[in-house]
Image (cartoon, rainbow, N blue to C red; front, side, top):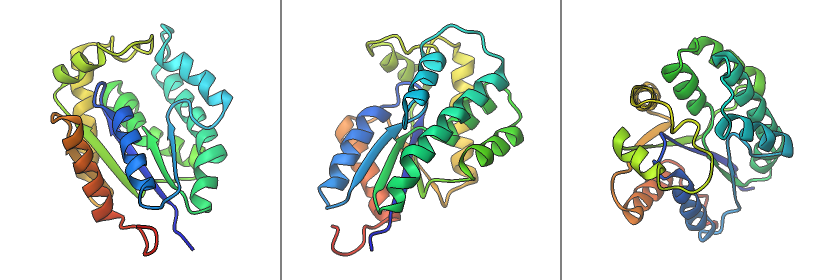
Length: 214
């Protein structure tokens, strides 16, 4: 029986997660794996997608805890509707953002007590954690410059100040340093092909596919 896996990609604005998760999914599928991709907030259900529009495209001045609660509500939808069923049938699930983003954005950058965020994660997901987390890291100025070229209106977090994004970056690095068994930091300043090679190497080193699937 194939073993399902749960891999998350994390990082600040403009880190390239959307591109890299697509390329990583293609590389793993080419090795005979069933790969499911999703994102947070907004994956798993129409309800989660509605929450995403509130969080990333609007101008509502949420209370910090309210924002954390909304992220966890969307996460609950994604985990129960998509992530758990896919893992249970043996798929490899790749998720663009997960709990570490909530800890970094709402905790490190916005100041919500991280113990509260841990409790909310247990409540919304039963404590489900990734098998592997890939943190795409690059300087704040470079990330915001990249993000500024993206089309669309999902720029609420991008419009927050540089100090916010510096705290955010440090949050991701601290999270990775505190959990090296789960997290790998990837230098995202290189070109797309180099970053993709680093990501795939990290995945295959940490989570080698079972025989017959490669």
